[in-house]
Length: 354
Image (tube, rainbow, N blue to C red; front, side):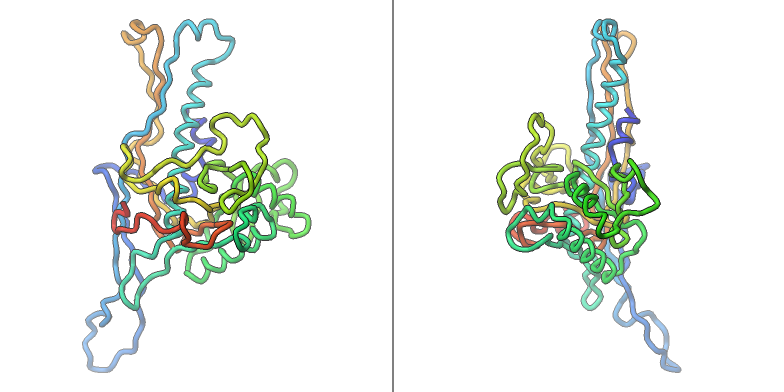
C-alpha cells in the first residue's frame, strides 16, 4: 500500500507538510513587511508609527478520515496464480494518493485567485496570479508549446516581482502538455542537458523553463475535469480526440469539494470553479498540508477472518490542505480571461477560507 501511495503522489513533497499531534487544525502566521526610517536625535523609538509589520493568520483544518478498502476472499487467494493482496494493496494506495494530490492542486488553484491575507492599508502583500495561455477563446492554446513557454516566463516574472523565492519553483501540467514541450526541445534548449535517454521522457521534473521544474500529472484540474478532457473544441475544451477505451477513470469530472460536502472541512471549490484551468506553477510556500494520520494500512484477522472467510484490507489517512502564500501560486488558463466566470475566486473568508 505504501509503495502504491508513494509512487503515485507528487504533490506531497512539493508543498509545506506538517504533522498534527493534537487538535483538529493548525494555524499558520503571516508577517507582512515593514519600513526603514531615519532616527531623529532625542526622539523615543517605540516601533514603527504605522503599526507595521502587519500580522495575519491562516487556519488549515484536517478533513474527516479518508479510507479505501477491499475484501479479499480466502478462496480467491488460494486459487489465484499471483499475489492478490499485494495488487489490491497497491490499488488502495493509488486511490489515496490520487485524492491527496487532487486536493492539494485544487488548493493551489484556489490560492492563485486570492488576495494576500495581509491586507493592512499601505502594507498589503501580493496575492495570487492567473495567466492566460495564448489569447481569446481558444482552449486548444493549452497545448501550444509556444504559448506555454511564454506563459512560463510570464509566471516566473510575476513570481520574481512578488518576491517569491526561486528555490522550489515547480509546474504541473497534464501529459500531453508535457510532451508538447519535449517535442519543442530541439529548438529551444529547455531540457537539462545533464539528463539524457529514457529519463528525458520520464515526467519526473526533467524539463526546466525559467528555473521552473516541470512535472506531469493526471490529477490537476483541467477544464473542469482531472488531467485531460476529450471532445469537440470550444472555449472550455481543447478539442483532443479520445484515444478510445479510456474506461471510467480517465478525464473524470471534478467533484464538489466545498466544505458543505460531508467529510470535507476545507473549501476545495465546486466542480464548476475550474472551467478553464490548464496547469499550475507554484513555489513550495504555495500550499500547506496538515496530516493527523499519515498513510496507514490495516488488515482484519482472527475471528473476523474465520466468520467471513477472508480479510478486509484498509488504507487510511487524515489530512487537510489549503493555500498558504497566494503570491507563490500561479494558475494557467486557456480560452478565458483571468477571474472570468468559472475561474473566479472562492473561499475568501479568512482565516479559515471555508
